[in-house]
Each structure stands twice: as C-alpha cells, then as structure tokens.
Image (tube, rainbow, N blue to C red; front, side, top):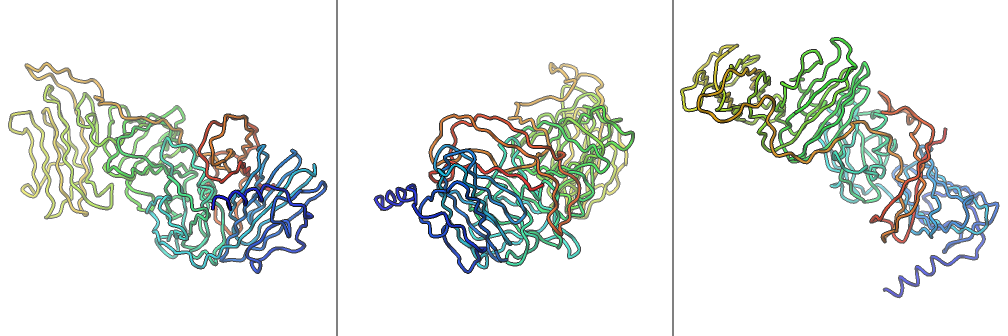
Length: 569
C-alpha cells in the first residue's frame, strides 16, 4: 500500500503532456465525476493565452465537490471560482505545489476560470457530484442553541419557527476569547426544510452578519466538509429580533470573568444573548454608560433566555439612576439577553459557581431578587444569605410582587447573628406579607422553593449604621472581591467574516511573510431573502495587510492553499 501511494503521488506531481482542452458545454450531473482539463489525469501545463471557463450545472438535491491541484510558476497565472451567489474565490500562489484542495459548491451553478500567461504553470481539477437525497434531517426549534461540533456526517439541522407565520433568524456564537472560527464559512444555510428543494442563501457567517431571515418558517444548515466547529448556533423567531439594528450571540463557560463594551447606539438599539454551557448563574458586576445619553430613552434591560422566549425584561438601568452600588446583581439563568437602546456601556460579568461579592453587604448597596422561573423556563429554588456579622445595617425591603401557590415555600428573614430574627416571614404559614419593610440587622436571608407559576420580586437597600461591638472585622466600603477569575476583555462587535487567508499543510511550516486581502463585503441580499438591520461595519474598499503566520497544524493533505474571497460589484 505504501508503494502504491508513493507511485500515485509521483504520478500526480508529474506534468501531463496532453493539450489543455476546455469543455465546450456546461458539465452536468449526467457525468457525475471527472477530471479537467478534458482527458487529463495529471497536472497539465496551462499554455500562455489560455482563458478557460469551466461551467458546472448543479441541480437541486446535489452539491459539487471540486478538488484542485495547482503548480503556479508565475504571478499572472491564476485560478478563480465563482459560486451560485456570485462570490469569487481565488487560489493564490504559495510557492509550492497544491494538492487535493477541496471546495464544496451548491446549486444551481458554478464556474472555474483558469488563466495562463506564463505558459509554465500547471493545473488539474477533479470533480464529483454529491446527491443530498440520503442526508438525515434533525429538527431544532427556535430558541434552542446547539453545538456545531455535534453534526454527524450526511446530516443537517432544520430550525423551525414557533408558528407558520414566523420566519427564522440564524446566528452563530463563539466562545468569548476564542480565535476567529473560520469553519463557520464551511456551514451552508438553505432557505427551507429540504436540502433537495431549498435554495442555498450563504454561509452561516454570511447569514449572521447580514441578519438574513428565511422566506418561510424554517432554515437548514449543513456542512459538507465534515469538519466540526467549537461554535454554537441559535435560531430565533425573526419577529423577536427584527426591531434591533444588531443582534449578537456569545458563548461562555463557568468560572469565567468577562469585561468589554456593549453598544446599541441607534434608535432601534441592539441585543446580545450570552449563553453559559455549563453554569446556571450570571453575576453582573459593572454597567457604566458613556457620555452618549439621549434623555429618558437611553437604557439597558435584562431578560432571561433568548429573545424567542419573550421573557419579561426584569431589570432596567438608565444613566440617571444606576451606580456601582447596584452591583453585583445575581441573574439565575444560563441564558441571558441584554437589550440596549441608544446606549453604549462598559460592562462586566462573571459566571462563578459561588460569589462572595453577591453575599457581602456594604453601605448603600441596592439589589433585586426574583423567583428563578421568571429568568428561566424551569423552576428551581434558591437560598440567598447576604450578611456581615461584624456590622449593623438598616435593610429596606420592597415587595414589588408576591404570588405563590399552595405548594411553594418561602422564608424571608432579617436579623442579627445569634439573636431572634428582627423580621421573619414564612410561606405558607404566613399568608399576608407587608409590601415594604425597614428593619435593622446584620443579614438578609431569602430562601424560595417555588413552582413554575410563582411570581416573587423584591428589591432591597442596605445602609450602614455601625460596627458590632467587639468585632475586629472592617466593613467594606464597596463590593468585596473574591479570588479573581480568568477574565477576557471583548469588544462586542462582529466584523464580516471572509475566507481565512492562511497557508495550509499537513506539516508545520516555518514562519513566513504572507499578504492577506481583507474586504468587507458589499451589502448584497440574496434574491427573495428578507434582510433587516445593517452590517456591523459599513462596506469599505479592500485593505491590504501584511501579517506573519507562525507554525500551524493544518487540515489539507500535501497542500499550501489560500482562498481569498471577494464579491462581484
């Protein structure tokens, strides 16, 4: 087998003496596999003056796999590929022979243009039509996130809207702090629930960036390359985010601290959904508005779950009233959506498993407590104990809402350590509760075991009175911190994602200079698609950047390849 493989590679990298013959007609699925130029089995010299346009007709229910082998010998020689959305990709010169470079294309058509100027470069293309009739469908409802690493071979996800009149908006979410995930360009999005009949409308990166909605009640997503991704995807009912100028999805994990900037400066504002894959609580630690304030309009609001869940906005902050004394604020949910209206704020949160800061009183501290089902779909209990036994506080409670069922249990108490509680309420023992309470104590304890129908909302304020006699503990003047968590700082905006300009090989490459073309695509809308909002950055002219790439592990066999993406203007 080793001898056969060696002979195959030697044959591939030799140069064919046949003429470079360009097909006269479009290639169809009637010839499901083949090599180009016509009759070639090895790399074939591209004569000077050749401008060969190879047309492929791709019927619905099929995808086309192209595998390129190229040995560029001069800069003017080039190979370009045009897909069904008129996106152009170039295979650029890397100084080595390219082999088995794959590119998948969707219906209805594709074009490969080979241009020879020097007469010294060589080229070979293998193609194969892939039927999609055997692909298995997995249904996902809007509002349910899913890992893009779990998509089995020959399988696709279909995201269904919540009703027949709804449309679907599809977004991806990377883990905050991860490098840009270029595999998102390998996920094809189809407008419908059937790969055999639906139109491909772009990559997952494209659909996210342009806020492109389905024309019907579903979208489908598939990856023909078979490579996984560390990112997640989320479909929302389009009506729940269409009013925003921007919508972003971000992923995080337990025991992580995040800081950055949130921006929703337009009249329509913006929304950000944060999902923690292995925790159940966010602790919001900072919210600081910048100088861009529009009277009573500017505000930031928090709701549990995704926009599709249509949870109530439980907390709302504005620049006139919010201060550091409102934080940390607990938000007992693994999915949190932040809504900004004509606002830009510095923010911070963490996903600690426990929070010393949340449990620590300090002078002028304010906060809110809600029954957990108001944040999440499922109900769960909690036991919050905010205390400092070395200091006495005046603790003011405001019962904004108090609805419990017969099966619910609640304990609310304020007091001093080792003494009877100054204030104590127990449900169902006590049926009536005072709407406002102001008592002195060293702690506030609230424990609730509730059903999905409960509605408990209380706010509190703590004012320092004096130290407890005999105590040697110093009262903190601000929030007490705990052992610092790993912290990532992000600017929560998202540029257009174009094909990664990176050299690929199965072996490590030495550091080299590489020229990268970066272009923000023009705002093209696929035909018959619904697009709302605007890209996060205005379209710009191409910018040439020179970057240095170090050693990398790469996925293509015996090949260096760069695919650069642009659009026909």
